Image 1 (cartoon, rainbow, N blue to C red):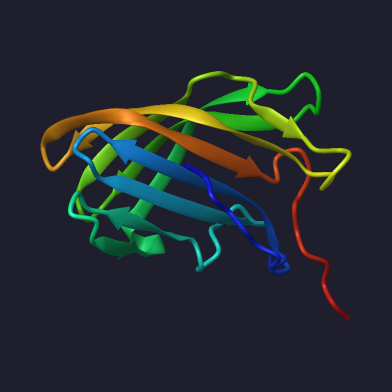
Image 2 (cartoon, rainbow, N blue to C red):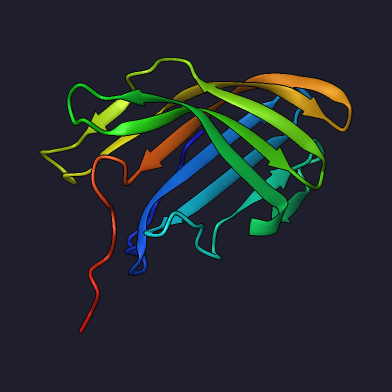
Length: 155
């Protein structure tokens, strides 16, 4: 579910990101990424993609997405506090989804390679989409909770 390739550093002021890849029982998919800024707001580049069952896509802007974490988990290894349950509201197409980590400790500690500590793993999803129940599975990647994952300001 996760095929991420990037060599682009984050812009200054972005401290981490929350990424969701969700497959729903009606054969649709959603990918959302939220770039968190130092002040707690979302960077304007935060967005997503909705994939219809016929494989046509729809761009989701920052204004189409509402996200709220509803439960956290604290790593005994890094001390980071990660959101492990979320409520996601997509305005168009209208849906309210509840996303929950399948396992609390899915923290990745990559000291010998990238040196980044982050949380990535499987989630279950259920909710209401256009008045009908949906459920299924996905993954969630959370960066910047162990320490800010930001680019250096060039001066």
